[in-house]
Image (cartoon, rainbow, N blue to C red):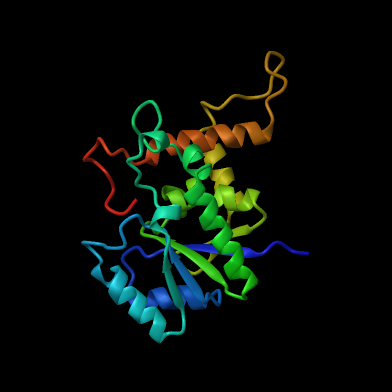
Length: 209
């Protein structure tokens, strides 16, 4: 049996009408907002109220998983030694696991689900480096809806990860013969985590990480 698909999408600066086209291109029937704060100062059309009402009129359910899948955490237990959100710790949390379970329930009820955050490019967003990796390990296929309606698989983004950090991730050699591809990918994810993670102690954060 083929694994169920979960899509992801970024609202970017799109109009609501074009955003709807992105969702309809993959027959999405339920949008799960993974922003910690469901509001945008620069794109108010994607504030929770206007967005949920627009989607409802278009026959798409809206849900907000801030606690389950949001990237802004202040709990010290979810931060690393530098005070940044540690994605691995978040993935092990009860709230995150509950969110994954709710996705399975939604799929079993027949919904076609897409996660949504603000970044147009999934590579720059926690929906890829924090959430999607866990969903794939749990048995989903994750597909990312790009701005032009094309699709990128999670494997394609992982290849992008490996390329970005190629010079600093370990390679298999005579001295390190046990370096596997899975190990390289895991290290690359950690490096990406460090680059984009929110810190409650820093004011220099992207608006809707």
